[in-house]
Image 1 (tube, rainbow, N blue to C red):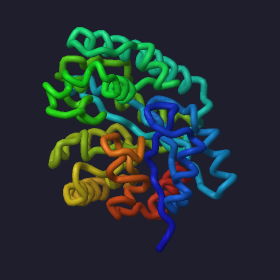
Image 2: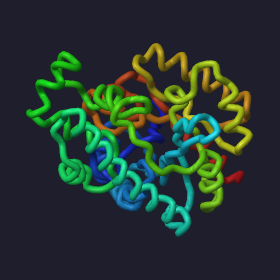
Image 3: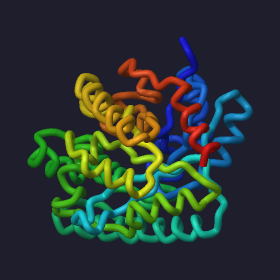
Image 4: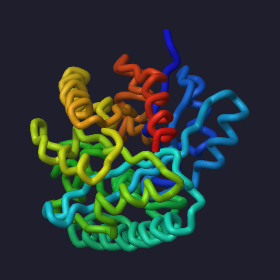
Length: 303
């Protein structure tokens, strides 16, 4: 078996459950040779992860997952992964700081809306859990664990929901606690990544964000200068995932884009992003070969 990787991993610098040191150790235990630390709008864990990786022989790729809103497409949210960029660049850090402040403001507003809906939860509890960049999973986690909300959950879900279920019922666009946060346009994110030392920009999890068969979106991102597509990703089932992997791999080849892959790992607990699939998609036996990382590195060299 060749070397395996995961190019989409989160830590406590955003909404992951594990510190950079812990996630690197987990990658080693899983048999992965390399991982990319790609926190939401944060580069706070990169250096610690690289240091930890050097100690135990795990290659750590510097990355970030930028939130964007496409204003001319009804402010639809897309995430852009950046790899091998200058993560100490002042312009980048300024954008990320603005994003982090917006995340805090959004969390406060979401909590207020949930309170109005009858849920018992405070912003202070969410902030304490997050210990850094606040995401919707932190809000959901706090609400779910509070015994005061149990009856309401049973009435709505017929059970205690997991984090993903709670977010989809209350916090995504069109739902009662949805709150928009600050984000840049997709093309600005692509340009920013390119400017930061010639980084490589990749469209994250299109299997969730791009309707199957809607080639126009991929074409637009290619026209904007995107370098790759995260074609190897997971949906609800392994079978469904394989269908999307095949389609987006074909789109990548058609538009001369590199193919990347990652689990979007936040936790190994079911009900949290990546929990069912595992680091490197290994729980589903959907391995991501090291050759994928070589292609990413070659793209960086060419640029």
